[in-house]
Each structure stands twice: as structure tokens, then as C-alpha cells.
Amino acid sequence: MPAVVTALNLNGLGVARALGRRGVPVYAVHTGGEDGPELRTRHVREVWRPSPGQSLVELLLERGRAFGELRPVLLPITDESVEAVAHARDRLASRYRIPMGDPRVVLRQLSKEGVAEAAAKHGMPVPATRACATREELEVALRALRAPYILKPQDKSEAYARSGAKKAYRLETADEVHATYASFSALEPRVVLQEFIPGTDADVWFCLLAMGRSGKPLASFVGHKIRQWPPHCGGTSSCEPAKADELVGLSVGYFGKVGLRGPGSIEFKRDPRDGRFYMIEPTVCRTDWQSAVADDNGVPIPYFVWCDETDTPLPALRPSRLRWRWVHLNSDRRSADYYRGRGELGFWSWLWSIRPPVRPAYFAIDDPGPALSIAVDGIRRVFRKLGRLVGLSSRASVP
Image (tube, rainbow, N blue to C red; front, side, top):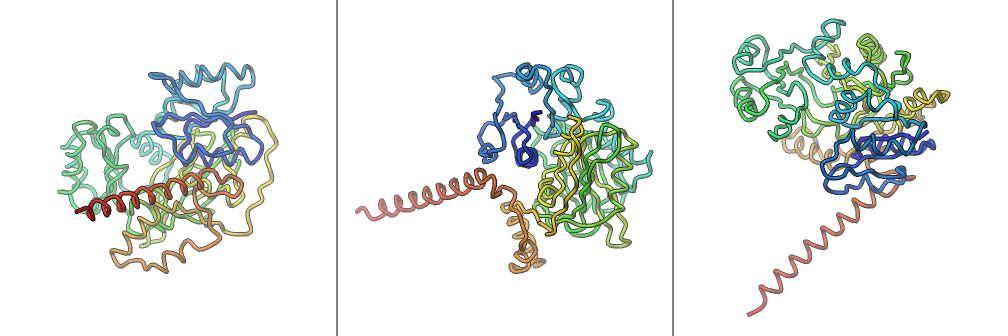
């Protein structure tokens, strides 16, 4: 039974590897302008590219006809594709198996406001949060919350993307909040303001889940970040496995009560003042950027979802005896440089934090293409720089 992933970015690469290693034929959508190293994976049989003006849903419907009654498992990779698939689920369901649950629930969980409502209803521990849509509402929220703050959009709308704003901002003062809000509010005024929980990047934990059609968990994996890029409120640049049964209980309980199915995760922040975990945000109906760390450690989240959708017996969990770390080398180097500049991290401490056993995000012994592509591009850049330097030197020596 094939699987279709809706993007071949780093997240999509991790999903393709988790499935392809176990014999699942994988097809991938690629809508990006440039071909990235992910396209060099051997675990994707065919890459689908939309024609000019063709939407993701139109492409999926067109290509889905070729499978007939087989109905591949459709795995969204980005929030935008989760939203598109949720809106068109009735149209897509005749050609794909879609591990999602009620689309109305999914769409609500893609918004920060919907998450806040569900968290309050089901008693999830969350930082103090306010949803705002005007400067006046933001001012009221600032008076109610303690600094420092996290400012982020209520949902990843096209308008917010056009503004060029970051995924989230960590801000120290009310003036910084107002100035940042003013930089994008003309395009997207709907935001969430949240109290920032103190602590380091390593205090950010996550629980990756595969939720079955029955509403019961199929597999789970807990880890914590080592560093993020950008620091304090960015994506994972390095992480490692960890043990926290409390997070599995909280995550399974939330997904089960809300009615979410398929792959997903919840990110938590551990407050160093009292050791409590607070939910930061869920990822719904897709895997996370760093989900390959679970596969590296014997918990292939996408494969469990595929098995459940195709009525294939679930594999026995065989956790790795080694605690494999996961690192996105380029992002982690930039993060380490930031902390070294602040005097908070030494060079050797950085190397020790990503010591073996470690799996670089793009490198895999059974799938060397993406890493080789990055290496070749790096060598080409070096030769181009050398060529420019030699050219400048030659021109300078001409009388």
C-alpha cells in the first residue's frame, strides 16, 4: 500500500525514510521553486510537481486516479497542507486514506485560539495566554501578563507569511511587543501573547505520537531539545531521547479528548522554578521537524500510522539500546555561535552536547543522496569563491 507525503522538505524526508525502510512505496509532492537535497533520497519512488496554477488538492485528485481502489495513505507534512487536506477531506477520501479525524476539529486545532480553548476545557497546564486582534486588545493583554513575552500569530495565514515575520518572537518589554506587532499587523492583526517560561532550550520537551483510528495511542516517543534556532523560541536544531511518562499521559489525554488522529505531537516547557511542564503548542495530523529522532531510536511514528490505516499488524516496539541524538548541523552551529557569543557555551561543550551516538539530519548510511548533495554544493561554493579570488588577484596584477 503506497503512501503520499505532501512536501519533500526535511520533515518529509524523515517520513519517507521511516516508511521506505520498511518497504512502503512513497510518492512525494514537491511545490518548491528549487530542488533541495531532500529530492536525492532513494526512498521516494516518484516526485509529483503541480502544473502552473494547480493547487495541492487538484494535484492529489489528479494523481490519485492512477491508484484506482488502492487508496494510498495520505500524510500531510506542513500545517498548510494539513489545512488544505482538512478542507477537502470529503473530496480526497475516495482516493486516499487520511489519518486525521474530524476535519472541523483539525482546523480548530490549527489556530492558537482553538488550542487555548481546548487546553482550558481539558485542564492542560499552559502558560498564561491572551488572544488579540487589535492594538487595544494587545494593550489589555500586556497589563494582564508578566514579562518577558512570546508573540506569535493565531494561525499560519498567508497574510502572516507575506509579512515576512518570524514564527515567534521573544520580547522583553511592552514597547518591544508594540513595535513588533506594528511591523506586521497591517497584514495580519490576529496574534497570541503568552508569558515566556524561563529556562534554557534544553527545558523544551516534546512527545511524538501516533494515534490510531480507534482513538488509542499506537506509539509514543519523548525527547527534549538541546538547542533551538533561532534560540529561545525557534525550531529544533539538536535533541535527544528522554523519559517522562507524565508527558505521554498528558499528550495522549489531550489528543484523545479533542479527537485528533494520526501523527502528531505536543511541545512542553519545563519551568525550572517548580519543575512543572507547560504545554506550548500541539502539532496536529503531521510529524514534527525532528521526528526522525524517534525513528533513529526504534519508534517509527509514520509507519505505525500507515499500519493502522492499512490494517497491517503493528510491529513490536524495539527501542534502540543506544540513545541516538539528532542534529541539524547548520542550524545547531548557528545556535551554538549565538550562545558562545554570549559566553554561555564553550566550543568543546558544544561538541560534547552532540557527541556520538548522533545522527545528522540529512545523513543516513542507507540513504546517502541528500548528504552527498549538500557536500557537493559546498565544494562548488568553495571553488566559486576561489575562482573569484583568483580572478581578482589576476586583475590586480595587471599593470
